[in-house]
Length: 59
Image (cartoon, rainbow, N blue to C red; front, side, top):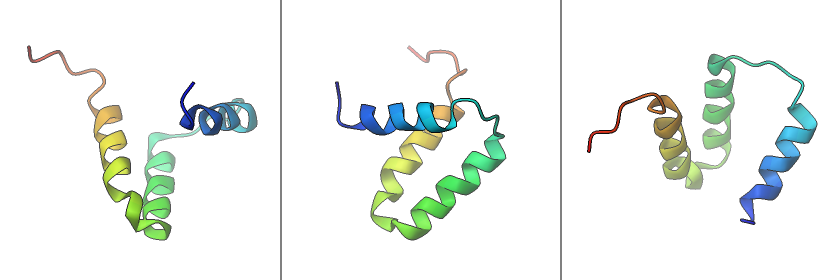
């Protein structure tokens, strides 16, 4: 289990029943980076990963 799994589990437990839009999520990610600029790169990587999930493999 990774350390981040605890945060992911908490998110699922606390917010698992909610429905959110990707626009809402994008705004929360922007807010987080505004408050924590040192996390800009990992948030950027997560956003790109989520945006490209349906892309076909380039290999």
